[in-house]
Length: 186
Image: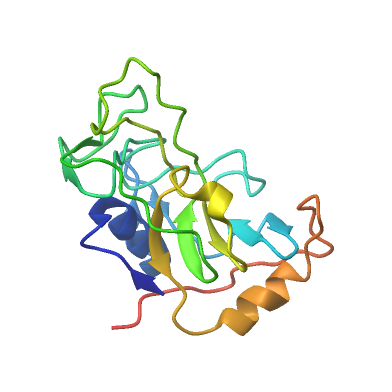
């Protein structure tokens, strides 16, 4: 994986820490993608994982807290931990310039909210994010400006395609796909 650390530093660091196994939540518990399952794969679209809490897409959490706010793709930490109520995690320093959803992209599973018409144009709008992610296997332009792309699969797309073939048009998996090990390649 190549992580877009300049564009999305908090998202990239959260994903890196969860892969490397050195992630700790605000309560001091170790959290990791190791042992988690890919709980959803929509054929010809994407694979979805990252729920280290419940394993079914209803949980997660991050090194910044349960759900945190990585507003935009360039953000500055307000304090180390998000607190889940919209006031912690990060504040924006730039509008949300999302990258296109093309094959191989790694993106947040949490969609950005619809921005109210009253919101000042060109200014960032917060959305909450946890540990869940998905990888697109085909172009998905309907996701542009909805989910934040923070990385790309460099090698191993054949594995992603093999996982995608275990899914269905509804996303239900035909068999369990587990992340037995993960880490960081220097």
